[in-house]
Image (cartoon, rainbow, N blue to C red; front, side, top):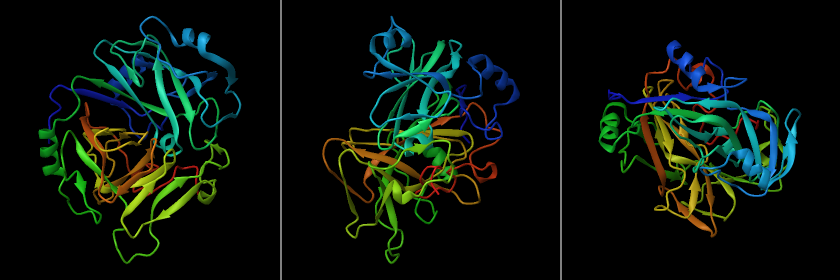
Length: 371
């Protein structure tokens, strides 16, 4: 077991049931000092603006200052509100941060947000980066929302993003990953047996384009989003027919899939991945060294992902979008890296079926709005 070596990584999965992952009681009190708001999560407030362009505030301005220049209209989310495709919305979150000088924050879309191709970034006052809260930040949080493939219906209290709080050098080195993989088997093949993990600045993740069993007929290996689909209400569960929103793509005989530029594809990783209970992980969303595409808007992997039910390893679902040109993607092609970090302490409860985690043993799962 690797020691945390004084590193403290505190994860706050915002707007989730407290049964899912509670900090130890001492840290609950600390969290209440760091993250203040009406609810236990990074949820949407009533105030919302349509913006002319995406922006960062810079050292001398607040989000409100920028919206006075770039705001184009106001919305109120105290009732169900449609957010249209490819429009830019700025929504104040109900939470505020008051971080001590030793803590920094990192935000990322929730899994459901990424699988619906809703692009979100957290923006702070006096900030020069997206999705990052500098040590000691004391102020409001705003969420930029850009629906890409589907229009969506949101309301006050919806949760589209999540936050992690970090202290020290939390990320594992390749040497630490090699040791952890030797003990735990972080990377497994299709049938769950241990596979050789390629570790180069994290664990290399590849695309699954071929079927596990060549004789298996009609196996779906990808979904492609339909841009002429109806609007999706985020409050629905198991409500929509996948065929109205997604085109299923069977495994090609060639083991090669051509990605149309601008379209969203949901693919699986070829590897079955595990996150032991004393680790968390994050998928690198875009690595220029492996291709002209972006993977995984929702990059956080919780402690316990792929680590329960007496079977090690769960495939990652990759949200993939080619940029300006068509892209040929082959089975086993590198698509990104999974970076592991130490948890400050072992969570009381971890991701898995025991607490009803939505995407446990997920396969090629669509978001929870679909039947």
